[in-house]
View 1 (cartoon, rainbow, N blue to C red):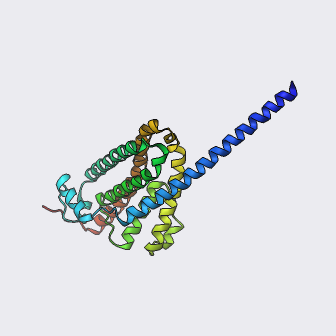
View 2 (cartoon, helix red, strand yellow):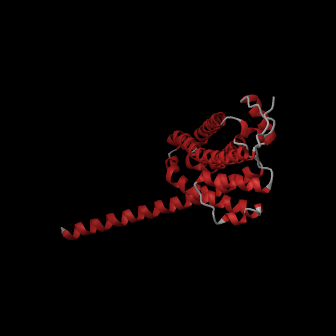
View 3 (cartoon, one colour):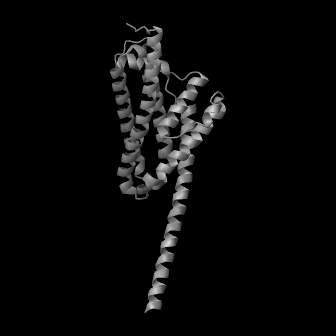
Length: 246
């Protein structure tokens, strides 16, 4: 009886080990796919899905009624107004991400890769808009580097080692994208696992995208807000008050 019981325990242990190995392999495969999709998505978004600063300035003037002629004028707008516009921008991105996640989520794990590519583009455009809301354009190499520093901050990635290369954008940006993709793919493995069930994954995909954007956007908005307040304080101290438009 003891021998049989011992064998049963060994069999159970072996089955458990095999199950754990299978789960580890699946997570490793999913992590690699997620990392590739995010890296590709952020690279493509960086190169093609760009918010035009001048068009967005017009949007801020017409849709939100900001009396500004340039982005320098943003630093004379009450901070509460900017915070409200940022909150509206975040909510809009969350809704788009949720709808996209629910739609592609019907396909389960098979649509994970295109979903993450689109999610990266939505995230990148949202971060660009938040940057502009708080008065920071991204035309020069230094401004582009700052944008990616904010994106890394939104992802919860420490890029202090990469900052020495920020003056060389061609080297800096790919390294930051890789760090972001690696960090975010870990979140995907932990949270997107429910998408292996196609019907349930539609609901899960929408919800996860929604909260993914919310978490990243809140960190990005905090980054730009703090930067905005520091710049505003400098302008006030120097007696340089940006002019508002009609």
